[in-house]
Amino acid sequence: MTILVTGASGHLGRLAVEALIARGFAPADIRAGARDTSRIADLAARGVEAVPLDYDAPASVEAAVRGVEQVLLVSASEPGKRVPQHLAVIDAAKAAGVAQLVYTSAPRATESELVVAPDHKATEEAIAASGIPATILRNNWYTENYLGTAAQARETGVVASSAGDGRVASASRRDYAEAAAVVLTTPGHLGEVYELGGDTSWDFAELAAALAEVLGREVALAPLSTEAHRAALRDAGLDEATASFVTTLDADIRDGALAEVTGQLSRLIGRPTTPLREGLREALA
Image 1 (cartoon, rainbow, N blue to C red):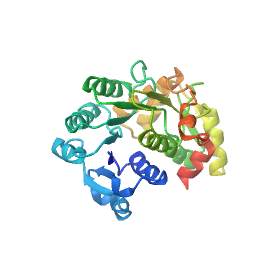
Image 2 (image 1 turned 120 degrees about the vertical axis):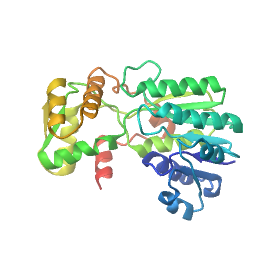
Image 3 (image 1 turned 180 degrees about the vertical axis):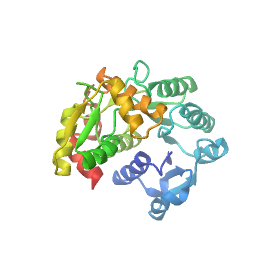
Image 4 (image 1 turned 30 degrees about the vertical axis):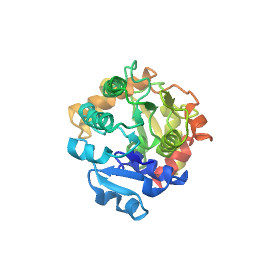
């Protein structure tokens, strides 16, 4: 049996390949797809089959999917472009008769107001319409998403946020990658939709405290209104679209879009999820 992991040169895809190997899956039975295979040369050196796979080049997708039984479709990284990119993989998987498609989605994707949810909702609907046996992994936020915040806090001693008292049930990418490996290597997951996230949620005051401990310096939370936050981001050099995206995300967090704790991730991986401080410390190391 061969498993294709898309986006294998990215953070999550690479960790998923490593998690499959750690679970005893033979490297030769893992096909790692990447736009630039030189970026996964180290995986190829371990016996993994590295193949070109560009979401924007359907022929490369079709070639990568051909002959595999399972596909881990790691969500593409560019909002607004994801749906056609994902459709290329779904169409190729259907044509190849793939037995299981695993997709990394977003929390409550079909009902959430989260700014990134529409692309994931459309992808989930396309997977359902395709008829491919599938497992949906609705991943909450990655703790590593806050490395930029950590860099700012290291420099300024401030965490700026317009998320109010909103909470985030984050976990480390390694946790989510391990969950993907579990559903690819154990039975009973076809047709399931898992809401995955950390065992505990945190707010931005707790994030500032965690960063103070990890960075070894004082870090204060600067709570801002959405308008003030957007203006501060523009003053820092962000373009209007990026500043609007960041503040819309903070508003979604304030409204509870990332707060849900389900326990499904820790149950899948058979251990507690990585705590915020530990995840930050590992990511910054």
